Amino acid sequence: MKYVARFEEIEGVLFRFDTRIYLGAYDPSAKGVCVGAIVGKNPGSAAPQKLGELAALELKGDKMLPTVGNRFLEAFELARKQVPVNAFVRVWNLFYVCNKDLGQALMTAAQLSSRLPMCESEGDAVPVVWFGWGDSDAELNPFKRRFLAHSYQQAFFYDGRQKKVIGTQPKEGDFAKHTQGMPAALVNAFLATLV
Image (cartoon, rainbow, N blue to C red; front, side, top):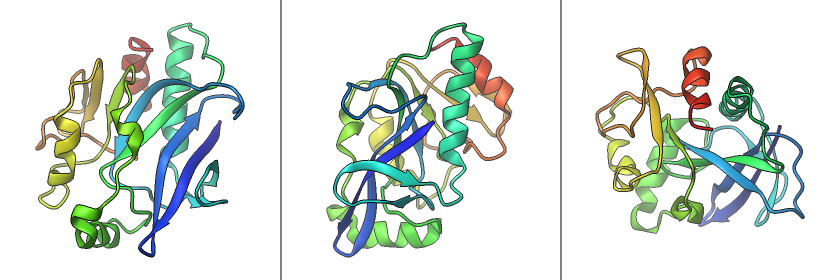
């Protein structure tokens, strides 16, 4: 797998946009094929190699990106389908402030308020959207609303309370479990029906 993103420094704050998890080799000269997206909270510890252009990123201990990539790869295998050439999974976030400390990232996002930039790719059509932004949270819930206002072709989340995959987009108060500690087999089996 290969991980790429476009990092920007805006008003002294580092942001990560257009994050992609390539499921095989990454050929920047070829057109990519988006096979899905995941919605998380915010970019964590992954770091840029360059600013202002789509480039490889350093994971720096970030486990979410490899986990998401592995779930999609295993789903293609279970479905007995070939992964398309230059296939990638988009990573969308409630906000794009880079900081492994969610509380600090949230404070920065709140300070920027109406000037908070979003990723342009959120408007792109994707075949399936996986929600993994965690439990209901009074401070995070307002950031969820722009995603909840969209209607996606196919959507799902792993419900942290019911301990099962739900084949719709979550409601604001649902527990759309983050990938950490999520049972892989249930997600793989469900995702295999969508790829």
